[in-house]
Each structure stands twice: as C-alpha cells, then as structure tokens.
Length: 177
Image (cartoon, rainbow, N blue to C red; front, side, top):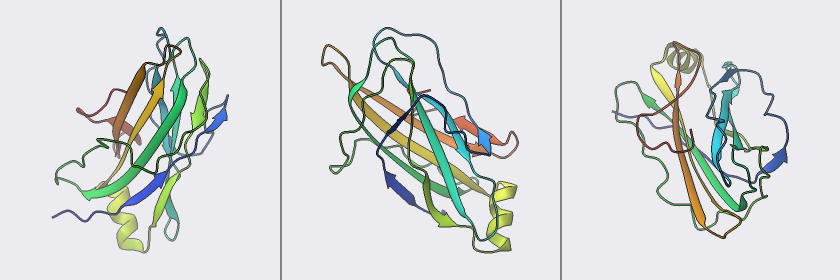
C-alpha cells in the first residue's frame, strides 16, 4: 500500500549563472551541446535529512543548447512511496495555472524553488527515509519555445537512491536528462 506524501510547487524560474549551490546529494544531467535550445536537468539536490526539518528537493535546469529558450513554463511535484509500490506517474501536462517564466539563455542555468511541504516528524519517519523504506520522487515538466517559435517539452522523473546518495533518472518519463 502506498503512503503518498505529496508536496507540490508550481515554479517561477530565477535566472542564475551558477548551480543551486545547496548542500546535499546530487544528480547530474546531460550537458552535451545541441542546436537550438534544449532544457535538461542539470542537478537535483536534497538537503540532509533531519528530524523536525522539511524535505527540500532543489532542481536546477540547464539550457544545454546554442539558442535561448523563450516562453518557459514549468511545474514540479514530489512524493514519497513505500519501496516496492508502483512508481508515481510524471506530469502529462502543465497545470492551467502554470505561469510564463523567465527565458533561459543558451548555456545558462535556472533554479526552481524547492519542493518542501513534508516534514520528517519523528524518529520513525527519519528511519523510513534514511533506510530507503520510503523512496523520494521528483517529477517535472518544462515547456518552452525556440527562436523559430517551435514548441518543445521536456519531462523528468527521478528518484533518490539511498545506496548512491543521489538522484537517478527513472527508466521511463525522462527526456530532460
């Protein structure tokens, strides 16, 4: 039985030429050059787990292409499931209230606000998260246009792997990695 712990944030991008710089574990996405804009996940970090603190996952996107991405819209969500339960689905579409966000220049990064509506309440929660009994997932969708007004969509689904202390891309639902 799944015990979902939903924490949702609709995002506003803050243009930054540095990665998010948060402490914690990290996943690295692709940074291979591409023509036009290509939004990829540069990293996902999670602040260290502490009893009484909230779980905060930080996502940094990167335009690994050679042109700016314009009319950027993004949404991210996160959940925790019991190990062995079915994987959560990604975002099939942006929510109606997703906002137009900052353009991302070529070779630049943008940090999404953290997903952090869940608190590690007690020692039992702490043990479930740090042992891998509960698996943290971060999913997102980014839509943007290129200079020719062609529309592009990037999706990502990553889970926290306690053996490597970092995020790993799920087998399905990833074209932003």
